[in-house]
Image (tube, helix red, strand yellow):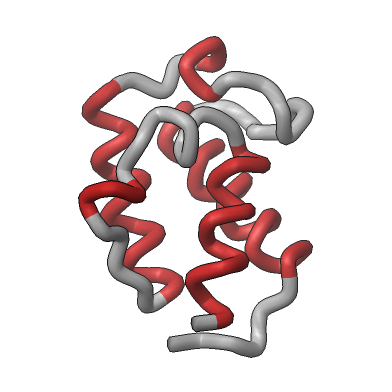
Length: 85
């Protein structure tokens, strides 16, 4: 696992990939619902696979919840915990 990333670096990587998936900059507040910006079930799966690969983590079934993946802030929160493990 890559433990050298701090929260701001994690946020930057998540924003960049969310923007790529949405085909527009993800420069909105961390608390905005991603679904309001166009993230759907397919792009959610793509995002999850990217996050696991990029950060060297594996999300357990109980972690794959709407709450954990609703906003950039919630994604960064769970990643921040997982990269520390």
